[in-house]
Length: 62
Image 1 (cartoon, rainbow, N blue to C red):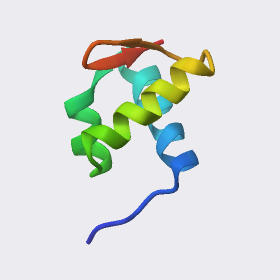
Image 2 (image 1 turned 180 degrees about the vertical axis):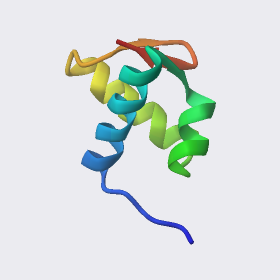
Image 3 (image 1 turned 90 degrees about the vertical axis):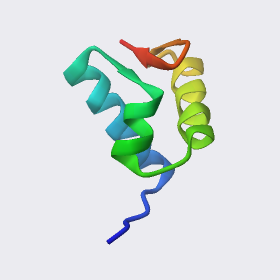
Image 4 (image 1 turned 135 degrees about the vertical axis):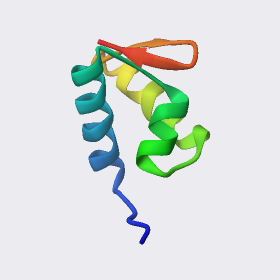
């Protein structure tokens, strides 16, 4: 069963995963959230622009 998440819910889950693991890869996030790499990349860019994470090549960290 596939569940679609709203952008805000996705970003909250990304922040939760990064806080738990300190850093997370793009591939892990696409698997966990069942969305495309482009979607995760856009979310990471927005979170980095908002100063909530530091974006690195292939993922992000706090």
